[in-house]
Image 1 (cartoon, rainbow, N blue to C red):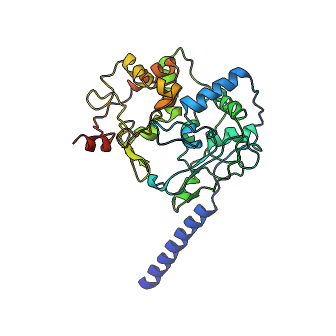
Image 2: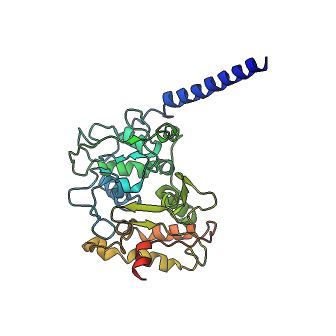
Image 3: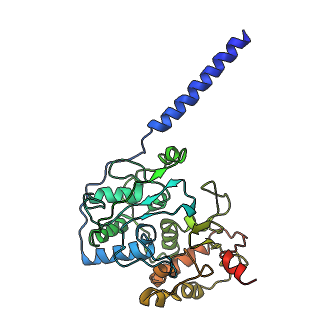
Length: 330
């Protein structure tokens, strides 16, 4: 009798597991229809979109062809928005390819509607209803205001079209299945806090820019609990390996001893490189921090971000951000 009960239990378990696996393979990402919107290409909106795309959100970092032989990898001439195949050294789960965002009708966004682009940015679903890999921080972009996301769309409509056929992203299992659960529709209009409320506006910037995405240590692709913004996330390319810095207000291992003016100056020091050309680098000076883009952030934005970062939980976590630099000094 007990053997029969055991057999039935095992059969039930197999059916349950099989059903769960079948569900994962059949599951579609949560999505809403794209908004029916036509973004007006006013000069003010296009310029705002340029600032957001190239500086604040630094979309160029993943979606452009860059020169990694130079400090902070500036965008190559004629490389803006053309897409990028991520190298194997990053140890990503599969072949990861950032999309061509130029208006090319065959290989870019030329045939996409404005609503489809907005949905992809904030909700993580492409025009065919497929989930984008959440390495693109659309989970943070969900909080991006309607005005800001529309400005980015306006700017993308104005950049030069580049015909650049790229392979598709191919995620490894089980990541491909789990990633289908990441997209989530944005419910209703989204507005940004007023700039006059520096703390709330700073929270908006730090959240939507996804500072935590790079500045939080991860294990198996998931943020380590209690280590928010405390650095230690490994970033590797053929040119070198670096670890993100602790940007919590810890006095010894974070930015707790930094003044507001010092925080702004830390970014401004690379402005000449951004405007007049970045120098060549060695493995000791290799960096993936987008200093060239952030060097030209508006001062009001930098100060708001600093004020918010001063309010997050301080975490004592000493990080050696440039291992190659330390080795060369011995």
